[in-house]
Image 1 (cartoon, rainbow, N blue to C red):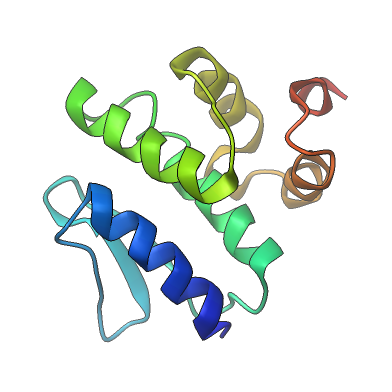
Image 2 (tube, one colour):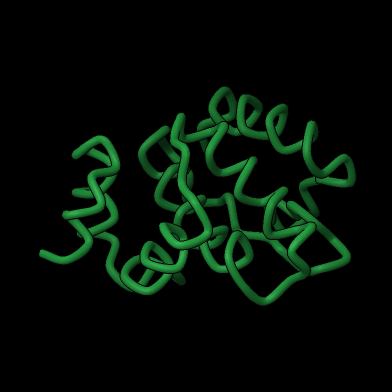
Length: 121
């Protein structure tokens, strides 16, 4: 597990979701009330964490939770990734990369500097 990268991410999350914590199952609970979380056990690099962030935070950043939390989750995602994704962008990202449905495409997307055209290839 890449503790340094996880700590960096946790500091960002804490600014937007102060109830964040890591439970005994190595799940990072981003927002407990809305059950927004992902597992950390296989995070071994910055790239792996970015893949997880995209895979598991793309949905709540655009749907499934209140607009208040969508905005906060987008802020977390954008601050960590250094992006300025909109709600519409996140709908597209969730469609093509959400729930870790295509890890290879997610890696290409990240390595391209988050070029939205990569989603459609």
